[in-house]
Image (cartoon, rainbow, N blue to C red; front, side, top):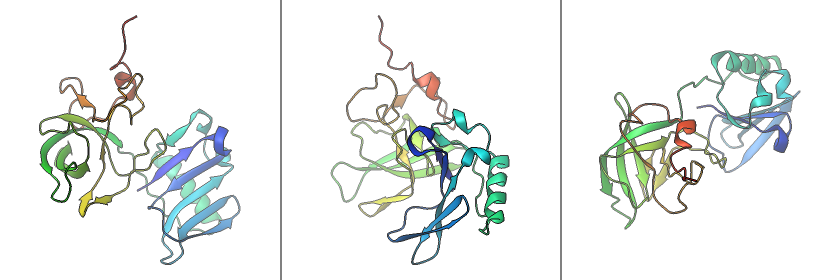
Length: 216
């Protein structure tokens, strides 16, 4: 997993990368313009911060939020890590993180009166078990899935989770959570038209921005 983000206005010229969930007790080590964050108990790396990032990667001036790094960019970052004495442990992940999924199964959670345990097809033979609390989730829907490794528009990172004892690998999104213009300000997932949003495709934010347009 590799999640990268950049927001020069808020954080300066710093590329933040996350490779594992935050640890309960984290420590840091700095070498040059790179800071490694790691689990103080296990030593596992949870992320790297690259200062003066625009000197390493071009095009960052156009970024504001999650940065989808390509293979060449990840190679450049790994080379910088090695140069400073770190391990080259960043792994490229070019698969889309917001995709259209199909709810194949939705059952009541055995230990909750409002959660549902769903099985959602996202691409080919890939199926994700996701625990969802939306009141309108039903079998047969095309929905938006934020996969593990996604960064939501509000900055929330999607990691594997466990809700009331059931594993969950992603999030079924509402229009409000996706920050779509004029999204309904109420609970409930976004249900998509199957013809316009086929299963397995990357979710098109620009296209979906017109879903809730109001006539003048």
